[in-house]
Amino acid sequence: MSIPENNSDFVPVASEIAREAGALLMGYFRQRVKVEYKGEVDLVTVADRQSEALILERIRARWPNHDVIGEEGARVESGSDYRWYVDPLDGTTNFAHAFPVFCVSLALEHKGQRIAGVIYDPTRDELFAAEQGSGAYLNGEKIRVSTIANLAECLVATGFPSHKRHQNPNIFFYHQITLRTHGVRRAGSAALDLCCVACGRFDAFWEFNLNPWDTAAGVLIVEEAGGRVSDFKGGPFRIDSRETLASNGLVHQALLAEFDAIFKGRGMEELPSPVEYVKSRGK
Ligand code: IPD
Ligand code: CA
Ligand code: CA
Image: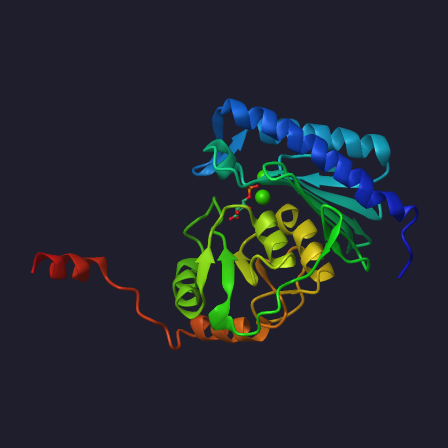
């Protein structure tokens, strides 16, 4: 593996950029900005676009030869060994409804390997950061995944993609895993969900159909905090993977076994029927 040049400033500079973008988001958040639609239920706001423009400008100024892929359309594709994945506002639906769970996510790949990741939550002033091989940090303090080894004692998280929201079977996973753990949270920012696994607030997180800008930084942060990230069969997580399962490592196998059973339709707890519920209410 070739050593990336001048890598010592990636995390500090990306942190500054993420903080600046986060401050911009907070300005719009306080004003309750107008929502536009990219798809039927896929929201976008002026804040997403302004944040991406700022981040792109800052990356280009500092690293003019790096490639950039941003969710809102930023594309610099020159064949550079370095590529940034930018989610200028992860949690747009929350943001648009004044629910304070959203963040900025920046990740850097070198020759396809994730080498730096920064996620900034401006509502709590929490900056999560990791550099490959150097651990993961929250506001400068080292973080570790949780030590819970029993799935029944876990608090886990998932998400439902805003577009194509009915194109995956996650509601079945939500139901089964809820019954086998302390609970499943669905907070609406995949990048922050991954950070919560990294610092032990959640013991695991899974989601179908995430995009590289949702996962790239958070996956590195989880791994550097001692956790494990894979697809739903236990295979290595890849940036173009449509399956993300992150955990503290200790409950990974148990979750993979649950997923395997759910995919095979085995041992499923039946979803209570609303029709039967109404009938019994009438008695
Ligand atoms: C979304 C959030 C959400 C997840 C969706 C993502 P966006 O990103 O991460 O938690 O469930 O799949 O698309 O659109 O707010 O950047
Ligand atoms: Ca996102
Ligand atoms: Ca986004």
